Image 1 (tube, rainbow, N blue to C red):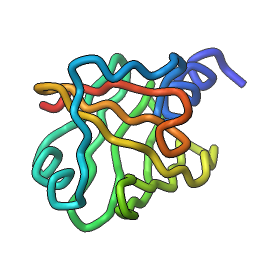
Image 2 (tube, rainbow, N blue to C red; image 1 turned 30 degrees about the vertical axis):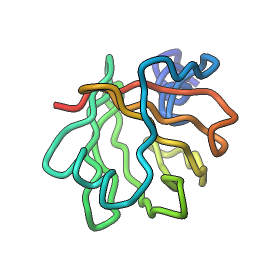
Image 3 (cartoon, one colour; image 1 turned 90 degrees about the vertical axis):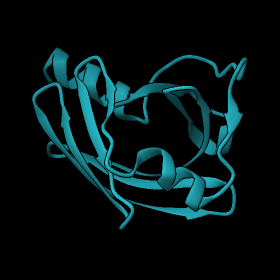
Length: 120
């Protein structure tokens, strides 16, 4: 597997590799709150541009490869099923936090790694 693919896979595991620290972040507690953040916007991070639609679709590009998927809101969590190029990253439910124009997704219902993306 190419290095860029490995990097993108790690980033997209929604998406990064650092323990979560919630300093300055507040939880997004509802589907409607989440949709109000992302509707019509792009979520960006170095090499990654994603759209998360109110209708439950995820689409975009990461390191030159297509990203597709679906999402739903379950209780307090953003639950996604994601594909990156030919690789199926599978399902994961994530805690979502926001701080200004930064949205943080924390894998494994808030117990896993996190990724910060800019809302643009």
